[in-house]
Image (cartoon, rainbow, N blue to C red):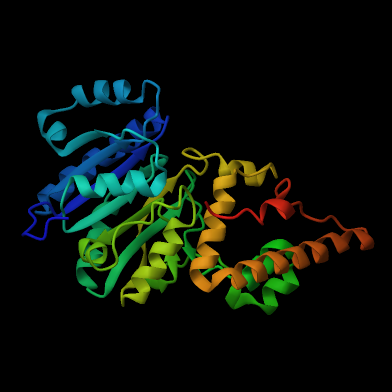
Length: 321
């Protein structure tokens, strides 16, 4: 990225893969935010990267773009990727398109609540040691959504397999999801469904790891940023609706207990190996299986055991490419 003085305060990157209407809805919610940012002397730009959708996504996005005011068109750039390299690759392409002081990575299945982008930017400008900051993600009805997390590891995989309240209480500091509060906080990692990142972070630790096709790239990047001395912040006054499952079927399939795609397990394995080597991956897999055995034992007492994703006991051993 350009090391010279940057005129653009904020570059917003949205990656599309066969979800043009979701992107348009997201952009519609962004338009008044772009005006507010400009009024506050925080010049914004938006880059929409189409990840080789192979459908009419670019045509629909171009038609929407042409209907906007000249000022809006000047702020919004449509970028076509020649390949679908995944979430990290698409965002990296968008980041590289426009040098800026801050970047906002925004899922296509999001709707921005009023004033939220400026609130994130203002908070980051106040806290110079925070390299990444996420908003309060929420459902359409306003209920909070998981967006603040602790690092995943062997014990957290045991808890995920066991799905037992008692185990979660005993190892409460290993539960990955952190309850959403009403005040600013620092966390291990934040969801990249919406995250603001300083350009200095990219300069120091590099771009996102494109070996992660989808999932775990956010927790891995946050781990690199923390290792380099940056804090990961959460700003609940900034609120963004996340239509979970709109841009990916993994969450929907997980809820339905259907088999998850291989890339999910490949990313999981890569992350665990990165955090602690092959031994950590093996320990996490074995402890997940122990947890599942404990969960299934509830049937002996006439209780219902929560199901895992189809064939997960086998897919856990999928190795990264």
